[in-house]
Length: 489
Ligand code: AMP
Ligand code: ZN
Ligand code: ZN
Image (cartoon, rainbow, N blue to C red):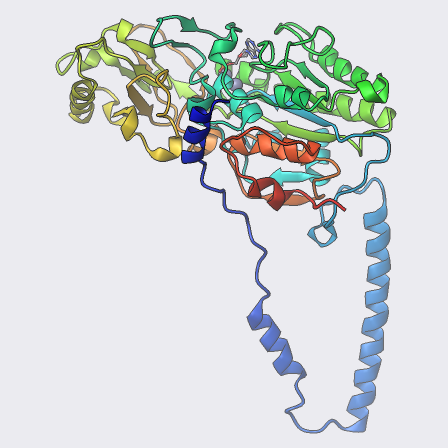
């Protein structure tokens, strides 16, 4: 990266995410027991002493028995009960692999909480024996697939990695970026596969937005990289990744990605609360089971680090929750060709000569007037005036006017007879419905550890720390991996 982009990055370093601290010892309990045991009362008589000694003996025997039972229970290999009492303090040594290996899995649109919809024994196994963001992983804004997947692998907010939407226009050339654009000029920053190859190590991608882009040291090699094809069965994706572990040890990629379109695909069609989602979640769980079994068969499950995430959540949408730009005509006409994206991220670039602040003022006047259906559920901003927590300003690819819509609402150009209910994402990342999952399992992740929610830009540093390689500058913090990973022995 050039020094200019570096200084931008440094100037906009993400605020460190607070790390949950251990509860301080309960002082009132400690004082209470001190008082009870204190000898400030009358002197003890001999009979009281005998009773006391007998009680003490019985208690000791009971405690010993309980201890033996607990040892047998927790040391049983089939036990998956998380136990904070047993959280290790050092990383577990590798037994078979020569180098740490990270498999980064994305289940698209896996809203936080989906894991409770049905029995998910395999995801549950990773959670029980690994580290979980207890209230989910926070996506970046906008909570869309391409911006988020690329933030996960670069540690950069979209304004810095350049993929500011699934579709947008280059403000200088007018050229359109789509999910099929693989020219390196769109994709800024350094994704993990490139960092890994820069260190003379091998990386493999079984789909990930940006992975087909040949950039820097990464040339998307045939052996370890696929052009996106959504019809490849999930089983084939898992089995291909497993096959990498059959290579000679110096050939095994140290970083692998694995991507599943579900349950996002179903979420858009039927919304988050439908039996179809439950089935999709169960299927993802079976894929995780297939991966675990394959790794176990090869004797590497305990050596491999699995990081399972989603890119964003999902919220139900319905035709009653619509806002039509044409309804703003009495205040200002917004032609369709000013609008780069309607929903849930409203992005408007008026032509030269039209003042963006004027457009914002008139739109908000109309929206607040009470005369526009659902108007109060949309607020437009000059991008410079968006809340700074969204980090959505520092790129000229971001159009000057951005609208934030309330959860579940959608913006359309004009009224139509279309009646539809389904699901969407792309909203403010502060909405809980946009949260997704984070699970880390492997030698550096404590078993049964629960951590507070954090933003996905932290994952880049987490992976480089596990792989013990130097990462590129990014918006994550160095203190994050140190706070959640087990220290090396
Ligand atoms: P979204 O429209 O934000 O819900 O995006 C999800 C969709 O992105 C998936 O259903 C896929 O069709 C598509 N997608 C995911 N990965 C890729 C990729 N590497 N290349 C092209 N399209 C992709
Ligand atoms: Zn997605
Ligand atoms: Zn989607």
